[in-house]
Length: 347
Image 1 (cartoon, rainbow, N blue to C red):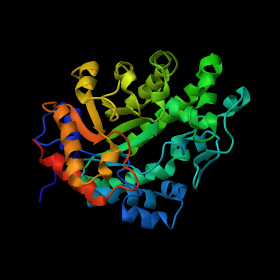
Image 2 (image 1 turned 45 degrees about the vertical axis):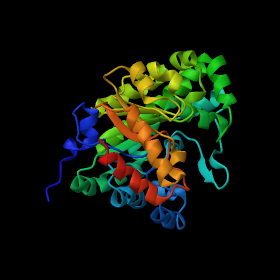
Image 3 (image 1 turned 30 degrees about the vertical axis):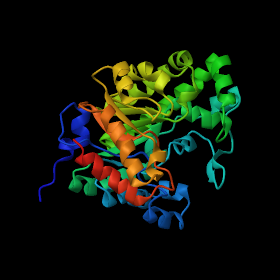
Image 4 (image 1 turned 135 degrees about the horizontal axis):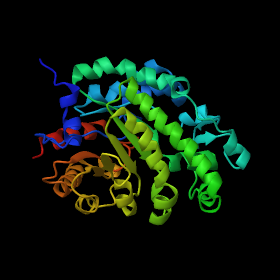
């Protein structure tokens, strides 16, 4: 059997504006706790071990593409480990999630942050990318590398972990222009150089995740966040790879995000794809946006929700199917399989 070259995969063809017979689909958190193979590995290792050890990260990356007919793989990692190279102490605490043990709160804290060399600070992830390339090449599948966006990274760095309103980070943003600029420039540079290194290691597409950006007013995003997203993109663009920008709750920010210089905008489930397309214009690729909760439902309900997304994207040759956020841990494996098959069969 002849394998389609990665460059001619449905995923990359769609990004380049080339019509494909079927709609490409991949899923945020497609490797995760809903899969028994993942849970078996996670029972023996901490999350950071699985991220740092390239053999483990490579194994998890390949689990979903071995189980399902996905159109892309995404390297197994997390947006927060690059902060360790900057001098922050990270752990994942059961029941709490990520914890930064030395959060950034003062001018001295920000001044002390380093901009690390990703080939040293994130060498495990880069090696995992190199390790999965032969298998993905054999399958004709592109690989997505990723990093967190500066604002979301700042939220974790300043708050020290999860926060309902991220008030410390947002007060810093609103009241300390020079410190905010210093912090965001370091974060944008760190994340951008990490994306560039992933592309050099073998990633075909680069994804920027901005989990908390939906909390911002549009004018705050445009004035105090978007310039640093562009800094990050300018660095990563040196690799010549397509770039995806996704934000949770990013409906009010679409025009600004669309002006950032990326190739693909991912949207969550709270906006109609037809409205998103009108606001973004015809040239950008649109990705989304099934509510992840729908994947927990019985098949007849899930199929109805998939149909609604496909109807909104009907005739759009610059559309990639995804969820509006990550796969939830309680998701039935069979629902993931049926979703992918159904999207591929739809016309």
